[in-house]
Image (tube, rainbow, N blue to C red; front, side):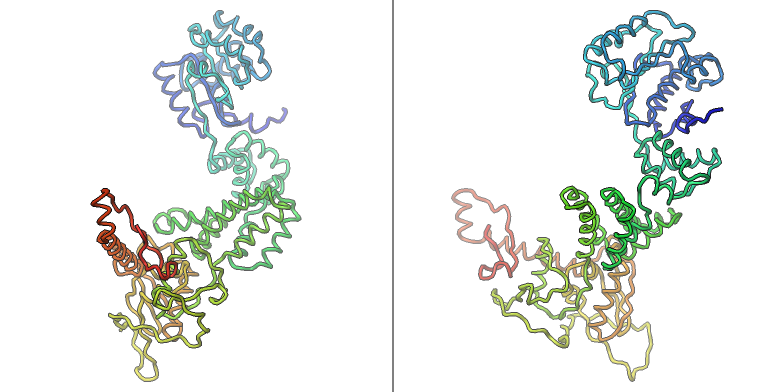
Length: 587
């Protein structure tokens, strides 16, 4: 017996076997069960999603010898002949090869005759959008009022090309592309029935390459069986399709995020020998970064994380990377990859475009925040906040004198550049110092007392970045010379990555005079005592005072009385940006 390809061998013969189209199955089953059949159906969708298959199943339901039913027997003469494509009352027409109006008229000449052996005469017109305008016009009257023994089943991949007069005469069903997980699950069942072993990663790559088409997935599986022999491995599938293993792609991201430029270029050189599709490589890198971002979002709900066990190495890598990288770094990498994919046609060479995209991720990774004097000026903190709000990026590692940064002298002007300070000045003591922890007992003699720690001043002194955001949204519970305990709300747990915690502990150690252990606790209620909450309250207070002063101004009052003018908004400028003009802008 000759070999039959998987796409034909595993074509569904019943609605119960149809994959990925429950909305179509439900409507047709209800129509068949309740005897509410329409005379014309239009099935649209991309290739390989089941348009012709659904039409043939419906033809079997209509002509099964057991009666009109949603569950045809599959054993009677009509069912077997329809399955083999030789039923006399199932007229299948390829509209792409019969576009002329004469072909359509010849087809419709036999509409008035009764069926030969079945209950209904079914016209299945595939790729109906290929008919000419005159062919559509010839079809309209019959399509609207056919004889009671005639059913029209139309299929198309491009419903936009059909005239509205045809669309209005049909019941339309849009067949959805199938998800990657659904295709991989079906391929697993098919290969298990065929007795062929396959790795989960191989099935996933086949499903991804199919791009929503089950027929394409089965055709690729046939090719993969011929390529791999007895079993399917992910490496063989990648070689056959021209993809790169996910382990190598994750290695590229690890090198970029860890700052290992030499290893990054070395890995790219090794991948270049495989002649990859560079644009697809960027797409797959973006998909990996998306997975990391999803894991970071799910980390806020521990129950959801536990409900999805680690089943493969890719998911394990995504979860580990989600714990190590800050959310800002992940989002920035995703944006860089998207821009790199968009600009790839303009690169001198696709390899150069990919290389520069990854080097951009490497260049924009945050550096560890140096610990600045805690008693710095408030104007400097406000200036950094304003720069951050405007999106001004200051390269990490560049000295302040080279950046052109000049601290405020407190009188609205600018002072000269600051000379590098040697030891850190003594921090400003908090008005209400946090009580010392008494949980750990140590000998009184030989242990130095920790320096006073004003958490709000310390948080504002940090450089903009994930570490500063973590400190701004945290409450200081207790501290001593070796241990600092802070509380963070669940909404900000994404900031508590391993890297951010390590850098924050390092900055605290420089303030307290020695290594410290940072402990995080969950905070159920919204706190008004965090540095971020205080900054927001101060900003709202300054805004209210400024608006009150503007409205009390004599000139503004005169304009209001004379012309009925109103002050719609008062915008506050940063003190450093409006030196000599005051901190209040004009209305």
